[in-house]
View 1 (cartoon, rainbow, N blue to C red):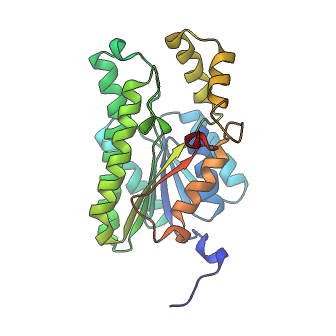
View 2 (tube, rainbow, N blue to C red):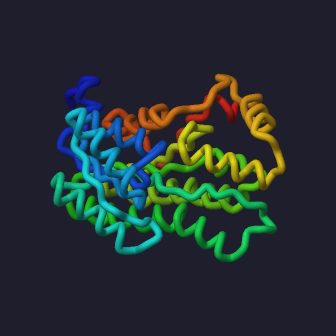
View 3 (cartoon, rainbow, N blue to C red):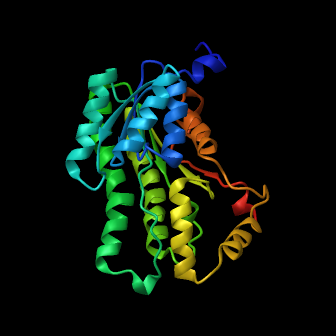
Length: 268
């Protein structure tokens, strides 16, 4: 078998990709890198203005992108986004399940509606979009790449995030189960578990968490950074680069893996 060059391994030209939650934050960083590598990207999100701006930025750099208004909580949105990728780019080769809800709440304050909302987005959304993508990947017979965005909370639950952490633990388990079943079709399934990352959503989350934990921002920041060997938070592009690797030919021998991009948090 002839070996591909590094450039060929990371060349996503001719591939169709869907990124849920791709309008902002980590999802946007992922969309930028996939488009830069040549993939045609569908930004599947409910944030219309932000998504259109992301598309505009990608196109301004010569990339290919389209916005599809899609709510991962609704069954029909998955088929809509996947078909949009096929119509625009000829195939669906890469799915990144990034859309998530990280609203904090103490365990005893987590009522039925809150639990349903967290799991509907963070778990059922992954299932809906993955099933829609896999049906088309199997039909095309070319394999594919699915990357789920998990969380450190899926391994190290934190106060004020019991339900969120449980949902991300489900994503970790789901990733492994999907990999086990879909390998026969040439479909790899891996997950990225980001550490603290500077995004618009993270700022809103931090403010909410402070109220839940009755802490100051300084106390929260210090408690986190004290456990981070690199002593810094991540940027969306830090996660985009990892997902690019998982979506590329460089990761062809990986499936069922959880990549912890956390500045060393788990080493402490």
